[in-house]
Length: 310
Ligand code: CP
Image 1 (cartoon, protein in one colour):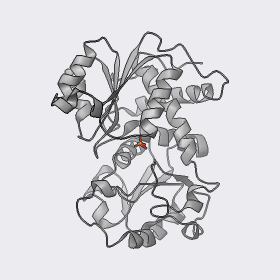
Image 2 (spheres, protein in one colour):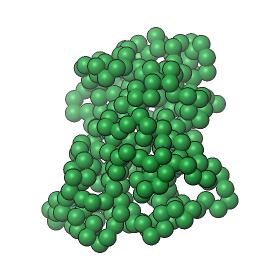
Image 3 (cartoon, helix red, strand yellow):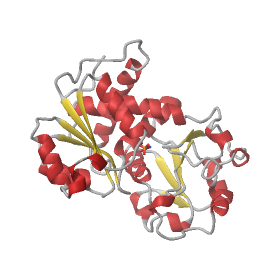
Image 4 (cartoon, protein in one colour):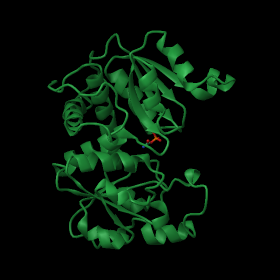
């Protein structure tokens, strides 16, 4: 199967078939990562520009490794050491880069909609690596891939996104993606960190973490994004931890093993305790490994590949 879309801007606008096509292709690429030689010639001759206007550890390195594993030529752009500092606009910057004959742009930007803007101005394929509080589609795809690998089909599974939903692009992409493939999605957190009317997206809203633990297959625990919060949205970090922190004691109320996920970076001791993050049910580092395979699949498919690879 080929992708219906020529960009990956978000999971809101993508067809469910495209999600499955990416997840199926990622399975083959995941196997490549376990080989002694982890390199395929798939993107030989293609040039990918990684355009990061915001800090990143996982996504940036994961995309770069995915591109290298597929033998693409890579250019890494860092806004802080570019002519952006002289006032050049995003569109002008990327049009100039595109004039040097590139094929794909991976972009992380603090402004929601920046990848969409680029997709209208450029001929290259655009991949959203996180745009403000809007979407982070490859993170949600790697989360979905990990759930499928660990506990099987997504349809009918109950996945809870816990914590700071309001500031989380990871939450939004997971909500769009998981609802599309038939999972039951719960969000749980303080009222001040959950957007009003989010239930209209076909999900359930809870404010008591102890109420959802007996119901869920997966807890995807989100980072408390203190840098994005302009006002105090809860009384103290200690109080947040007491009410919403995922601890081993809380998980004792589970009726079955719960898959513990976190997109990273983690605030250990705040939204998740170290004993949970490092427990046998945690797949946090497997998410990171799977992220390379999922990004290889996205790059491969946007470059015109089809999912029946070997
Ligand atoms: N999960 C995630 O997007 O991490 P980075 O900000 O380190 O890329």
